Length: 59
Image 1 (cartoon, rainbow, N blue to C red):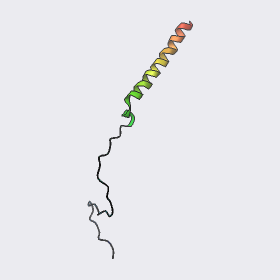
Image 2 (tube, rainbow, N blue to C red):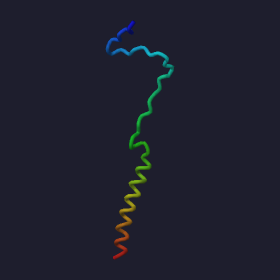
Image 3 (cartoon, rainbow, N blue to C red):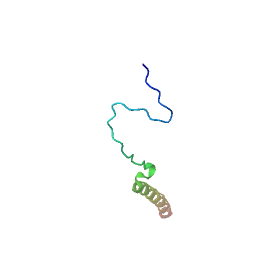
């Protein structure tokens, strides 16, 4: 005997599922750790500024 057909748009019954529904945590992506990105940007700025300071001192 074939299982009964489920109409489109309806969820078929699940057998053996004991999991509870839970909220998914939002994916922060690149903005998950803004302090890390801020540190990297500031470090890059300091390296570029240091390069120009070294060039001025070398004159």
